[in-house]
Length: 542
Image 1 (cartoon, rainbow, N blue to C red):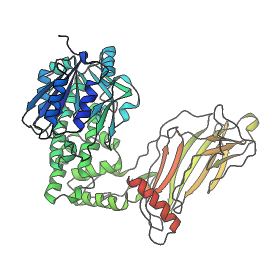
Image 2 (spheres, rainbow, N blue to C red):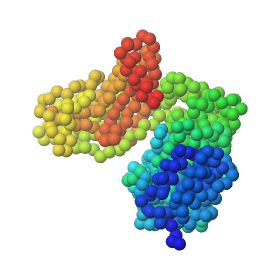
Image 3 (tube, rainbow, N blue to C red):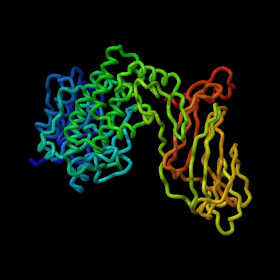
Image 4 (tube, rainbow, N blue to C red):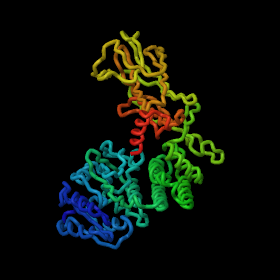
């Protein structure tokens, strides 16, 4: 009998009616049944899953193989059982409530053969509200690294593995882990692999969130998830030496598994469980939470991890409850830096560094368009008054050297002066932004620098500044080229409405400064503003 190209492993426990769609998506694969083996292990199902498997085995003899066993409590044992009988050149794992795209296996096997890959990751999407991290699937790549890609955020075993690799290193799933048992397997396979490839131009895998949210990952309690996270990290630490590579992998666990233990439901836990969770996080943080890893995380998560690490249970509860009720805390602008005043900020008894509370913005360096660019963007605050200060450089040469340069809130319709774009008539007025502005020659004498101070006003639900500049009657939209822009969050308006203030680069690399309220204002605010804020609030809480 010809050896199949791929063995698909399906661990099954009470997944009807989703199981039927899963199996149909497998037997209908374009790779063909002569190149396919399906090994399904019924882990003591009490619904009709076992009978459905037998029905498919009878209908597709030689293709679908079914093993029935007593319930083991998780997917690890049935997956290991299937590996003992698998015969394919590659092995692929699928959740029995999920399904594949028609060409998934054919495309992944072709990729593995073409690039001599030991692991192939096919594009995976969520359905029915299931979250799936998408950064890895931006583009197909024949050779990605575990250490400098988004792969650590995609550690499910729903991948194509070369079976020679699996057997050479005796890769199996730890059967004592109720959740996350696929991660040690996947991490070690990726560490051992000669090459890892990504197929991103076709949706291979559809991950389904069941209507009753009964997937095992959603049911595990805090302490079980903590124990599993610790086991995953200890296994990975035995494979990856300390340094940037390990930090890259463990960033996933600190920002995902561990951070989820100190979310909004943490304050509702009993005190003993809260203390045990913090103690477990502290043990892992003491071992693996390096300064570089800490500084790479967003401020909210790193503060919560640090409070847990210090055993500051009361402060951690207060930080979570305050943010759930009021949004992020007030910020402090000091020496050009923005700090969020979470509980523990400059508390001498904790000794947490200011850097932990600093808000670091992320701006994407871009090539300058027509020599026009953003020089700087800074936040200004005087009591309740806030403003953004912009400096924009515009090249002015030849016939335009005496032209006026001014900042506007928007370009006229279809008037942006881009390559191939239509120029607006000289002298056309653009709507000016509120605030103060002036201009001066650039230091090199080849352009003009526009300096503007734009107030961020509390009575506007949203302020968008796209830094359009009018030069000789034409408009230019300014691309971002700053190294970093702070993203403070404020709630110091007279109406005491907290506002999120941010300066970011949009998909085209343009500077966008926005504010958005985080909750309803007090009764003194106008009805119109209340309606606007209510709409924004609904969007923020979806």
